[in-house]
Length: 146
Length: 234
Image 1 (spheres, chains in turn blue, cyan):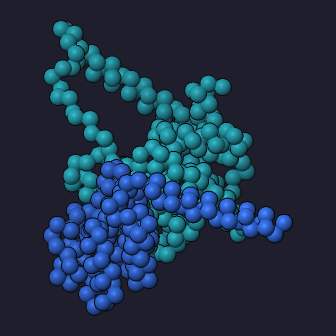
Image 2 (cartoon, chains in turn yellow, orange):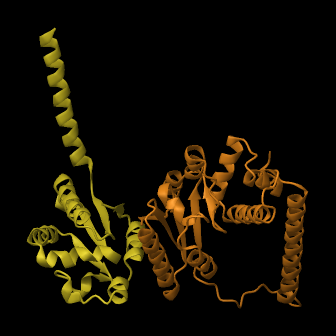
């Protein structure tokens, strides 16, 4: 009986591993937008961690990820100015093809100087964060809010 | 029952007064989410009920006054419909007059697919409510400035319901102003949350004017995404 159980367990385990591999291969191509609009260090760091895990699971060649920040969420790039860990997280994600976009309405309304935001260039600024997210969804991007 | 009969004013009134069986209620909820006209009618009837309830502090079921008020509304509908028909006849007569040529000189406007966005709020923090209203207003302004046709629906459930309750909303004037300014904006409250509030806390939620009720916030989010709406959580 014990033997039978262990064989059954091994079979199940084998099946499980096989299926998880199959699933990983079966994710196909993905387009994903990650939305940040709160000024909360924990949420922001966890969100960046989620994105890295996402890339690990799917493979950077299989997924296009865009981060859209607006309102209080823009603070992520301000924080990264002085936070080495966060800076590294963002640099690594950018190296894997992740875009970091910021809402121009937020910059204007809150009179935020672009220079106070980490590694932000003009091509990263979108006219409206929320409209950008809506647009990306119409282009087949899946929406995730950490 | 035909579709026409099903959505008569009587039927919708019964719905607003919560006199319908669950099955009929659900069919209206479905219709509301898919059919803008029905949505508007329900909204108007609900407002009327609110007005009547407000005027007659504690109405014993729909009394004679309510019936009269509704009859008045029905007359108003009738009158409007007659006016619309008359106006169309006049326009038709003017346009097709002697030569009977169709209205070919009017440029055909390129049909542009409107952007549709659902904004979901489920937290009761006034700061987040304000941020949500800011986001929605910025979005509507952005689309308007760019000549982009759009529809935006704000769906609240859970603690987010507080934003649309007349007795708890921190921003009733602002919401009224936004509703007036943008006819492509709707606010929708989750019926499940309203019922839970009644069941668990004995609170009868009175909603701000013009707020639509949907069966379930979550179901609405799924439906809207199926219908091609973008989803954004505030």
